[in-house]
Amino acid sequence: MNSALHIGRNALLGYQGALQVVGSNISGAGSADYTRLTPQLDSLPNLGGVALQPGAGVALTDIRRNIDLALENRLRLSTAEVESLSKQQAALAEIETYFDDLDGTGIPTLLSEFFGGFEAVGSDPEADRG
Image (cartoon, rainbow, N blue to C red; front, side):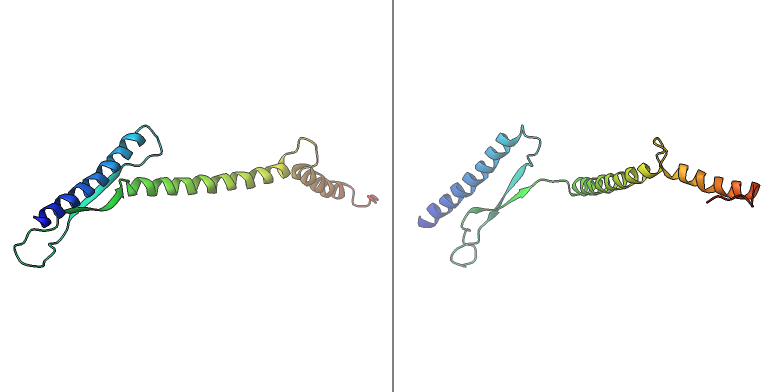
């Protein structure tokens, strides 16, 4: 009789925990960030170790998050790629300031002056350019 009460007690405790998990799932269902949980109930071995004796009931042994590992991995890779491209864009924007010649001090102007100097020397090598 005592073992039957023990089995019933274990069952009530196990299913009480499972109902709490289900309640958590219901309350979190409206949240975009919530991940559904699944309670894992497992049977308990018999107490006396005697063959053909009933077990000790069930117990809540684990609570698992239901996630899609492939989807989570794709999200992680996409986030890393976005971060990498954002850093690359920042570096290219900084380099672009050197090639932007709106104020006449960029690389194109300097290269024009440089090659213009060669052209001037080529057309009049004897001139004083001091």
